[in-house]
Length: 76
Length: 532
Image (cartoon, rainbow over all chains, first blue to last red; front, side):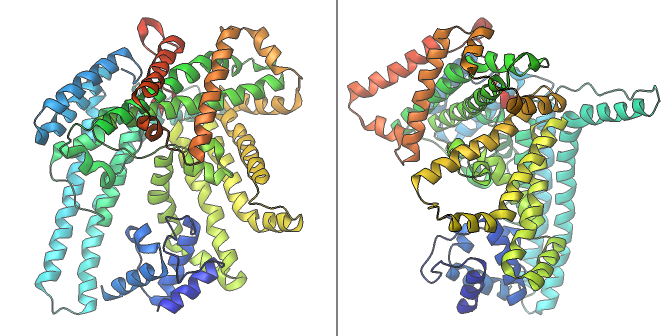
């Protein structure tokens, strides 16, 4: 799942090392428009409901935290 | 009682002393009593609006919380249920919570709409009625806009929506929620705080802390300096320039007037916020940042992330994301993505949403067509820059412009400042019609020496006052540049030896006392944002 998330991230914004980066939101790498594009991709790719309450920097700061979020939402 | 009045300082000093003598667990009760006293002194009848909003907020949040708890208990008691059945239970709970949320937010909005916008709507309806030939007039409602209503209503709506989304638990103590909505340093002009950020801080026990006291006092002094020495000094000049018969001035003077207004409004609003945050810090409470040197922004979008930060954050959380993630916008994005690819799909909603967000920001400032135009202008600039960003990138690449170079950054800052000047002219002009005239004149009626014309006009300011203004501005600019470079001014000064440190404190105090502009009966003029 992590590889696919990194692929989606690269489609939205290239030139970022998503395997290492852990400040995607707090570091200003992804802006709110990127987040929205990412959420709509994640929703259709993994068939999960991502609510506005899930849009926190902690959930979107790295590919790994995004992966954790998807796994949590799939379990609900 | 404005934040720069002598009465406020006296009031705050008394509260501060009693606060640290008071039993720690009841400190928040003292703050609540102080907040309501402050509010009632500012206007007795207005307090009923605040109480009404607090009650709606409190009970709607409790009802939503109760339903959410029932849902959690239902799921816990029926662990064997299948995924679909669980989802059905969740859906039922969410529908109920959503209904309560919508009703509560609508009540909040209705109150705000009636007190703030009814005369605007009725006035426009009357002019339409008269234009089509009827002589009847709809009578207007005579309601005084309650102090800080835009600020506490937005905080209330944010809280209700957060509870509806299940972000955190509803506050069960009505007094604690009432304090969140009425905290006296911030009720006049924000910042628009969120319960999850300050709710616990407001009600936690606070020990006397030397750093909080001195840093808070420093921030208060800096706020006084910006408001009384800079903003209020230049205020009569700005008011003298933006008048209905602006045609008596050259375009260059009008242009200079807009720049002076940009300085005035920044020092007025951010100075007030400094006093608010400083006072709160002295009480051991950290309020969110509302300004981050916005005039150093390199784009209008960045400016809106650095000016009135808490309003921008509110709009992002409760307007921007819900619209962007709504079904129609998602569908539209998908269609564009399938046809033109991911990059283009990103731009479609990004171009649409600024119109909703910025028109709302415009209307938030006041009930007047000029604020709608202000919102529209900002939306066009932000949406335009998003839509044209690939083209800009191509141009800069082709011209081999190093966008990371200092020269380009300075150019971007000046360009952004000039773009913003037009929106400032819209806000300050007496009406939308005169705003158009002023903006056109700014670019068509050029005169070489606007400073000479400024002195000729004698806006109740002599040359000495302009010198004080210039020196104060230079100090503000120097401090801002240092802060941009990451220097923590208050921390740096706080670490100096006692002699130079106190020399700085005394100089600042003297500067405020000697060069501050005080209104009649030692009551400084009101804040501009107090009216929003």
